[in-house]
Every structure is written in C-alpha cells, then in structure tokens.
Image (cartoon, rainbow, N blue to C red; front, side, top):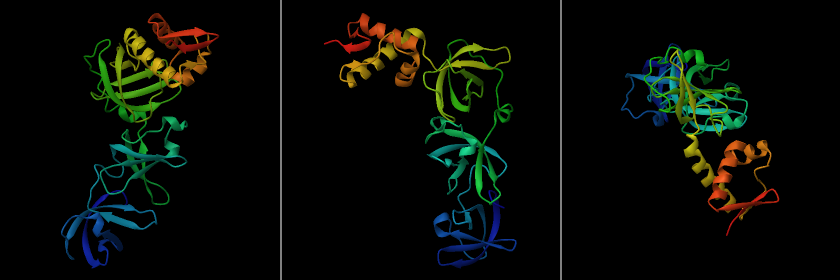
Length: 281
C-alpha cells in the first residue's frame, strides 16, 4: 500500500479533509494535500505514505515513480547523522539513509544534486529511497559513442570510492574519473563537467575534471593570487612545502601549485622568502 498510487473511494468529509478507504483501512486525505474539487462518493487517485507520527496519509499530488521503481530524485537537504532527503514529485520528501551514502560526509549530495533511487518500505513501514548500485545502470548505459579526445561531457556522479568516481553522462555514457583527475573529489549526485581523456574499446570513457594544462595554469594562478591577497599578502607556503598540506589548503596537487606559483613569480605578482610567499607591491 505505502509508496503506491491507488484509486480509492471517498468515505466521508471531516474537519481537516476527507477519509478514503483501502480495504478496511481508513486513510486521511487532508485538504492541504489536494487541489481537486472532491465530494463524498467520488473515487480519487492518491499516493499513500506514512507521516512522521506514523499515520497513513494520502495525497493527490502523484510522484514520478512509485515503490519498487527507479527514478531520478533531486536532493533538497542533507542532515548529519540522518542522511539526505530527496523530492520525487509528491508532497513529502523521502529519506536516503546515511547508511546508503558515502562514509565521508563531505561526499554526501547537496541541494540540487540528483540521485537515481528506488523507493522501498522499511520494517517500520517508513518510505525510504535507496540509491541504485552501478549494476543497475548497465541497462541504461550507451556504449556506442562518437566522442573523441578532449570532448566535453556532462552528467551526474553515481559512485564514489577510493579509486575514483563514476558518472553517467547526459548521453548515458559511463565515465570513470580516476582520483588523480580532479582537484576536489566530486559528491555523490553532483552534476559535473569533464573532458574525455580516453574512449575505451568497450565504449566506456575515462574522464578528467581537470582543464587542459595550459588552461589550468592560468586558473590556478588566479585562484592562488586571490588567496594570497585575502591572507594579507603572505602565505606560509612555497615550492618546498609539503604536498599534503598544499592539497588540504588549496585543493590542488603540489605540481599544480608550483606551476601556479611559477606563473605568478614570472609575472612579478609574488616572491618567495624563507619558505613563504609574499605579494609584491
């Protein structure tokens, strides 16, 4: 019953709405959950779920997909120690449990990200959304692509792990992003833009979220310059600084940092002294 669309008769009108009947079960259909003109005796299509207090509730705002089906759902909120709430087109947001999300909370989806989920009901009768494992996407993937090296691709991240991330492009190609091919690890559900660095024989892609090197030097140099300016003209970093500290602070590799620093020094923007970098006046 929960998580499905039903065509049910209206038994009676009460103070705050209507009562619809499913077998022997009486279910509340509040006025605020319908915009239809209804009367007792009508039949109405409703989506049924369980509200926070545990009561069954019906709504005439029908979702894009129902129990046991997969569909794309937009993230509306993520809460620590709970999970992410997604919108499926009906009047209630559905929880994706933290147990179904990456262990690192910074990789959880943010509002506006999208997850491909299936609706399920747990042992307490609560409606939950479970993100699809990658095996589910094998039926969706397009393995016939005409993409070439450095072509741009856009799509959502569907898997993140220590090795890297997997995206499904807007054209439904599978794109693998190795952990060395991004400055900042993408979130589950994030919509990203990358470039093709390999088209494999099986039609899958290797993708980089990094710009081409000659483009990257300029972007990183501008970022670093802005960072130094905001730090009152000096940062405790130079070309000998620790790679891990550089990555944690600037979200870039040491080699990228050195290229950006060299760019700024070549253009007379900064100078190094005693292991620090100073803004030149």
